[in-house]
Structures are given as C-alpha cells and as structure tokens.
Amino acid sequence: MFGMMQQEQYKVAMEAAVYMVEVDDLLFPKRDYLLQVYYLFANFVEFTEGRTLAKPLVDFMKLCYEEQGEEAVLPKTLKHFGLPDSYLENFERLRANAHLPLKLFLPDKTKHFLKALFASKKQVGILTDGNPVEQLNKLKHIDWEELSPFLSLLKIFFLKELAFRNLEPLDFLQETYAVDKADICIVKQL
Image 1: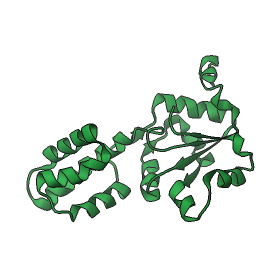
Image 2: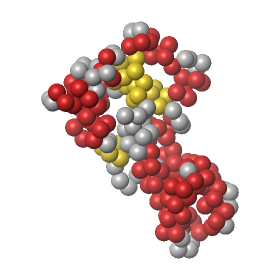
Image 3: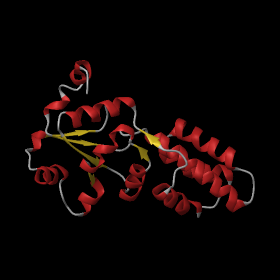
C-alpha cells in the first residue's frame, strides 16, 4: 500500500473520478522511444547503403534532436549525409511500427502516481495525441512491472481518432465513463 506521504503528494489530483494520462513524457520519456528509432533507422540506412555509417548517423541524429528538436532531425540528417528523400517514408514507417531493442520504463514518479490512483479505485485511461499506430506501438514496448495487473482496467483513446469521428474528447469521455466533465482529470505531466 502507499504511505501517507505518497498519498498526500497526490491529494489534490485524487479528487477526480477519472484520470486520463498521456503516453509521451508521462508514461515514459518520448526521447527514450525516439533514440531507439534513430538507432534502428541508422542501422537500416547502413545496411541499405552498404557503407559504414550507423554510428555517425545515430550520433548526429541524437545531437540534432537534443539541440534543435525532433522536427529538425530527419531533414538535417538526410542533408548532412547526402541521403535521398526516399528515406523519409522508411523512417516514418519505422517510427510507427518499430520493434524496439529495449523496453520502455515508467519513471518512478509515474509509477507511484498510477499506483495511488489504482489504490484509490480511480478509473484510469490513456488519452494520447499523435499517430494512433505509433502511440499503440509505444504502449506495447512499456515494461509495466508491478502495474501489469492493472492493464486490463486501462482504456485507450486517441485524440486523432476522436477528431476524425468529429467527437469532442471531454464529451466522449463524459459519456464513456458516465461522469461529469468536472470529474475528469487529464494528466499530461507530473
């Protein structure tokens, strides 16, 4: 169970009935996923090009990500290494469907928060933005550790899918969970 201090830490947040958490940067650092995708992509390019460039490619991608952000990585990488734009499609496909070499781990803060929610009998789900295929793929690579028994209680909702169906997320969640909107807490960061 949880000590009083841990429960107290989330006291304000524990007043809602339903909690929706984001995948990226809450369940795990998005960076952890992207760096593994960069590694896989660099090895794919090395194999395809038939020349040794996986290490410099992944090092460049990591540095570019850290200095200029996610959006700059691929265009700058292709330009820097003189690679054709045809690699864009390969990268996007890999990013969405990658079979990661390493598991993704929940930060301790997130684990404690989710444990506290489940211990308090709160309804917990995932409301995530981004490509639904990619977001679902990320979830498959998480090592849930001691939270594994609670996985069957999680419902997953994709903002892009709701938008495609012309559904307003809060209205949809209100109806799905049969609660007032005020009883829904969307958690994007801790």
